[in-house]
Length: 355
Image (cartoon, rainbow, N blue to C red; front, side):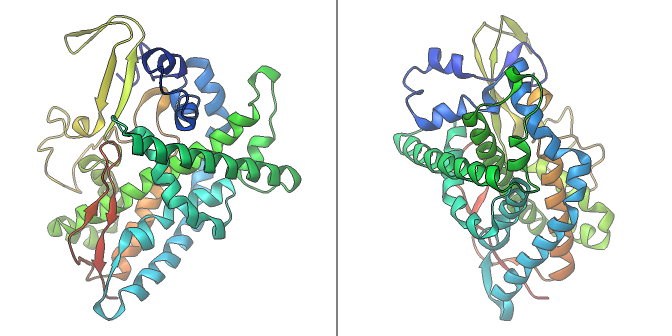
């Protein structure tokens, strides 16, 4: 379904027709104008300039930086848990790691990255299937602040270019009709930054939690480093950071024997697909040696997540260093999951460690 051109993402035109009260919100204006809500050639026009930052070669070139950032954050975690104390893994590692990585990719200075936690959470309320007035308020304020920040960053890069995505986006070439407007440039940076850490933050905490609550599987990964990529993949399958997405039927279509009328909205539950017994045997078991694991956690088709390889790299780097440095890592209290439906993450993951 995700790859079928007959199913489209809800776009600005759909929003104006189906939800006429929404376009007045800055958050809706951003979301339904962004790459996430574009179809066909319009989507490709926005995706193409960003895709170059996420090629296999570019991601591989980030490996050393990811390892270095991970080591520094685990130093902080080690200090916080020295003497048997507990610390919130999400606050010290799970959140700042992807923020630092995508920040370096885009060009956000390290000293300015701390402000994005609350703003990212506010903007992510747009992904909830039901938005309360409080959700809209948080999302609107976040989008306004983030647009102002990235507009300023682009102004800075015009006068002082650097080796980052912000500078690369300003170097537009090709046909004039394919070039991006100033608002589109700002919104691309906003989307890449928030999407680049919100979902990966979820992945890192969910992965660590899954392993610590499955000690037999954890022991296998500790004993065999070759299992680490499989552990990341099984974590994505077993507890997906992104639970669902939405598609609109472009014409009357039949889906699994059900007729979907033109304009019909369908919720695609990625987490259910990841546990489909027709695809994965014993799907509710967490098994790092599971053969032929294929996940839909990053979507599929034209809207497949550009940052999938980078997220996997961050997961593998963290897992390797974490297991090597902390042989007695353990959950130190009840975790607190984020109050959300579409995005899975922890607000508080208390861990204790020695090493």
